[in-house]
Length: 232
Image 1 (cartoon, one colour):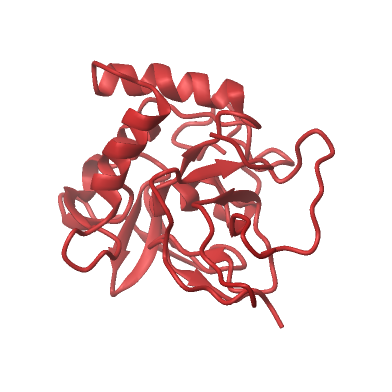
Image 2 (cartoon, one colour):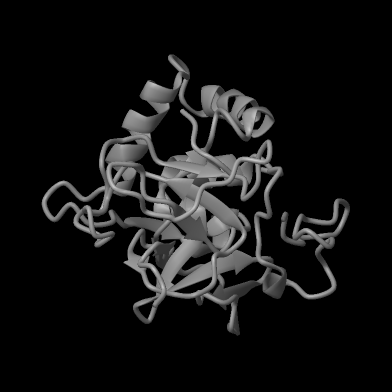
C-alpha cells in the first residue's frame, strides 16, 4: 500500500506509488504506525536531492523521525512552499540566498527565509495552503495557478495540469487575465530571476523534446522551461 507522502502543489499529502524527482521534508508528520497526523511540524520546509553521499534509509516513516516527502519536480516543491536544502543542495541554497537578498534586503539565513515563506504559504485561519491573487500574464515559467479548482503550472504560452505521474493536459495561457496563485510570491520572484536548480525544475512531461535527459531547461531556448537527504 503506498505511503501518504507524495506532495501536491497545494501542499497536501496523498498516497501514490511513484516518488517523483525531488525529495524533502517538513518535520515529523506521522505517528508510531506511520499514519500522517499533521500537515507540517515547524517552519523548516526543504526540498532535497533524491540521492546524496550514498545515504540510504529504509524503511521510510520511522517512528520519531522526519517524514520523507516526494514531489513531482522542483516547481511542485516551490508551489507547496519548500526551498532548497542547505546540506545536500548547498550550491542551490547559496544561489537561492543571493536571489532572496535581492528580493528581501536584510537577513537571509534559513530562519528568516523560512519565517517569510511560512507566512506566504499558510493561511492563518484554516492552517491550509494560502492562495494569492496575481496577473497570469506576468507570471514566470514554473509558477503554479489554480484553474477550475486544479493546479496548473505556467510553461511558456501554456498552462499544464499537474498529476502525480506528470503533466497531463495543456491549455493556452490566457492573456491579460487575473488568476489565483498557488506558489508563494517570494518563490515566484526566485523563478522570475531565472532559477536553474541542480534538481529537475520540471518533470520531462512538461515539454517533450525541450528538456535535457535530467529535466533541466535547455539554455538558449526561447521561453522553454528550466528545468536527498535532510538538512537545514
